[in-house]
Image (cartoon, rainbow, N blue to C red):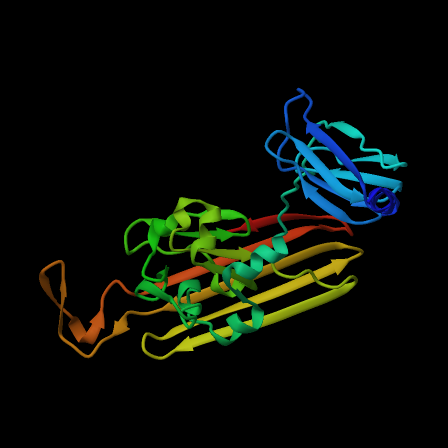
Length: 323
């Protein structure tokens, strides 16, 4: 019987995997740290620390090992250990918090991308040459969502989506026009022949110009500069038979060695409107119409504009005179 017991003891002592590694994980205050992940290499054994911070690896053969510690909010650690003759060491891992530093957050805005989100219409000189109506407000009336309130021929104010007066902003080459904000007989004081580029902003994007832009914004921008060492001129005309409306505009521009000068003169003359009726109602009063002519709708308009300045690669200096 004794030889059998001795043989069994020798057999168990020769079987590998009898060693173990035990330990405890604590934080910077030496308090137990439960839920920490521990990885034993090269065997890739994994365990999680218990509520008291203890952990253990069983049945390990003799050899060299490396324990890796990982826990969210704490610095990762590694510790090497060597097992021989079935030893069972006890490790104490004290970990420290890892500083969490956020990277710098930069908020930037690109005007080009912003313009893509705006509901804007851009008009050029070709549009106004094809849509000369006597007033600027009537010339842009063909655009969707835009109309005009007009009294006679020479007085008109723009309407954007049903809003006008002090609910829309009209900027003429950077100068805010406020003459159209009062009664219906107050219109824009802008030469319709002297408009080459216009930006019309509709929708919420117009509020970036202020609360007056609730309905929209009309930006009348300066015309394009002439090429260097060039002279350019144009003549435009308009005629309407209903009220014998005739008008025209002449423009002459020169650019000599980046010094430019542009002059324009416009003139319009129109008689009373002809209407096919003998009476009309105004403020609850019925008034007669003599000779089928609507009185006080005739007028005459003259405008003179002179622009001069110097154009450079990085800047443009411009002086504008309007009469």
